[in-house]
Length: 246
Image (spheres, rainbow, N blue to C red):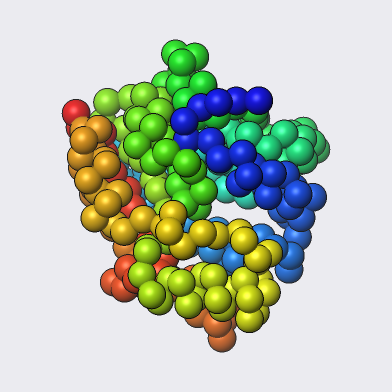
């Protein structure tokens, strides 16, 4: 059992129980399935704009080294691999990684999945051009330790992508009361409102580590179309891209 500072063992147990439902688009991970196209486009566009690439078409990320921290069963990891990236998926839920590895092998995707905390893995002298930490920071026990480890994995001038929930009354009503208790889109207890982070708090943590936020956008659900879009409203979900300049 890992004892890394950011690891919340109860959170890991929750995700272990959901492992076999990761790829069910109508199950508990439905919000992530619906959100994934927007997250993927945000990441792809920033990576292509930041790193000079001669390639276009279906593999615009070829040659880039990425790591998806909190990859689960590979919901984001797989499409990034299809875009040409050399990618590692990192997670502590071994049952989720078993599913992820099986899927990658079936589809011939070159993905390395590692069962480790980000703190432990950061000691392995690995480095990447970009780190993805999407919908995970609200589940960690020590935010600063988690972000420090993410920073250690990132090369200078590399990009960190992070998405999470703001700690506001609207996020409590939407993400917890609405999603978990009324609509039952997520199992009760999936989120703890006190662990949500305001953008200003994330920015303060990142500045201490030598990051500069390049882009910060809200993410808004469109119920009629069951899709997500970028928004200026940061009150519930938001996503950011930060460059390691220090």
